[in-house]
Image (cartoon, rainbow, N blue to C red):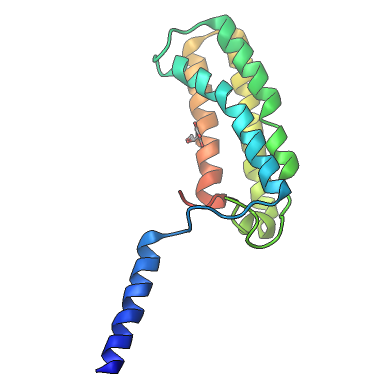
Length: 152
Ligand code: ASC
């Protein structure tokens, strides 16, 4: 009887752990904090472009150009801080960032290249081409997150 109770407790804990997934927060050392701050800083530009691309806001060529140029600069910053703070202090960064550095670098390059094209298209001002470039940029965000960011 005791054995069954123990097994039940064990099964329940495993079940709960599987369902609840990763902890809500993983501690952040200084590098993780710097990454978060830099990603947060670049997001208003990406969101602003997103609203115009999705038609939630009227396309304003000058506003779009400014956001794309700013994003091209700000989006470089997070990648200066991808150094591990040590186990349990890397925030949303998964350990394979450090162990599979080559693949991570390839994701970073894909993103950076997509951002350059997005800025070029923004400055040229053809909304249909801008939409494609914006979509491609978002796809590189997702591709990296799917492999290297703690699932949310
Ligand atoms: C965003 C955001 C991301 C990317 C990604 C695009 O706005 O926060 O991580 O776009 O979702 O697929």
